[in-house]
Image (cartoon, rainbow, N blue to C red; front, top):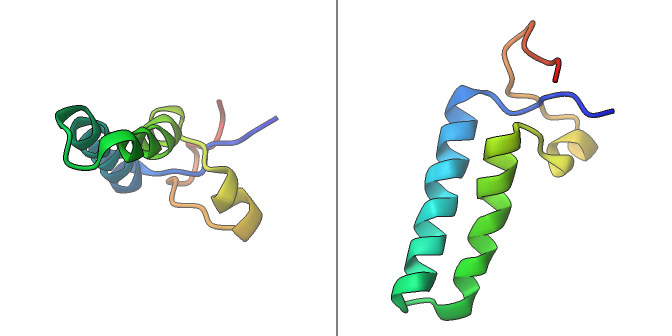
Length: 67
């Protein structure tokens, strides 16, 4: 169905960004906009980015594409 298309550094950056946005939302500076942090967090944890699929981008190392 889906193949992994997010590699190591990309995955780490998405998780950190997602957690950071969620934290900022929980602490108040950006309020409800922090919920946007779920998108990079979930794509980072799953290793699949639908937008990357549409654009043909793949940062996953060779041989690591199977779910």
